[in-house]
Length: 363
Image (cartoon, one colour):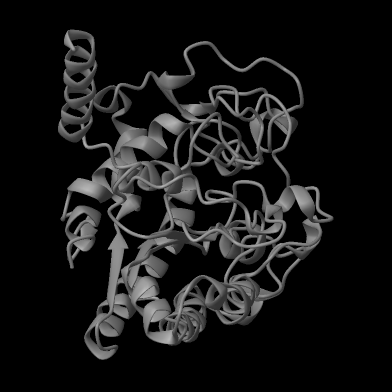
C-alpha cells in the first residue's frame, strides 16, 4: 500500500513540475506552424531538389543534435525556436513527407529562391514563394481534409495556426545586385523595385488569406549590406564595415513591407499580419556585438569558399566558440542570433508588432 502511495505521489509531483515548466509538448499553444521563405528558414527541402544551394553536409548542423539536415546554420533556425516555444515539433520539410501529411505544420522554404519567380535560377531548381503557396494549396485542398470531419473544422484549425514567412533577401542578393545575371537593376530604380516586390507579395498574402491563413508573422530583410558575401568583395575597401548603399535597398523594401502588412490587417477580416523588425536588431548586433554576448560580428564562423563570401567548405571544422559568432557562413547567421531574433519576436511588441507572438497566440 505504501509503495503504491509513493508511486502515486511521485507521479503527481512529476505532473505538477511539468505543469510549472510549461510542458508545451502536451499542450501546444497553436495547432500548427507553417513556414515559407528562403535559406534562412529552409530545413531540408533543397536537399531533394536539383540545385547546388544545399546545406546537407558538415559543418552545417555542427551544434544540432540531428546533424546536417539542410539548415543553413550550425543549429536551429528562427522557425525552430518559435515552434519550440509554441510546443510543436519541428515543422518537417514538405518534400520529406512520405504519405499522409502531419497536422502540426510543414516547412515549404527553399534556399536561393525569392519573391520573384526568376530569382535563384542560376543555382538550379528551388521553390519561389508562389510555388511554395502552390504546394500549401495542394496540401490544404487534397491532404488536410482527410484529418477533419468538415470544412468548418479545417478552417478553424488554419485560423489558429501560425504562419512564419521570411522572403525577399535573394531578390536583392541573387537578383538585383547581380547585373551580369539579371536585368532587374536596369529595369527598376531602387524605389520601384521595392514596390515591384511588395506588389507581388500583396497578391501572395491575399492568396494565403484565401487559403485560410490568419496569423501571419513576416520578417523584414536584414542588413544585407553587412553580410561577408557583400563586405568581402574586392571592390569594397573597408573590410568588415557594412556597405550602406546595399542596406538602403533593404530599408526601402522594409518600409514598403510595413505599409503593406498594416493595410492587409485592416482590410482582411480576422487577419493579423505581424511584421518582425529584424533589420534594426541585426544591425545593432553587428555594430555592438558585446551587447548580445558576441565577440565576432564580421567574419564567418565556418571556413567558406572564396575568402568567406560563400557557403561552408565541406567537412572542415568551424571556429571555436560558435555561440560567440554572428555569422555562420558568407550569408547566414548562427543559431545564437536566430535565438535572439526569435526571443524578441515572441516577447517584444516593439520588435514584432502590432503584437508579439505571445499575444498573437491568444487572439
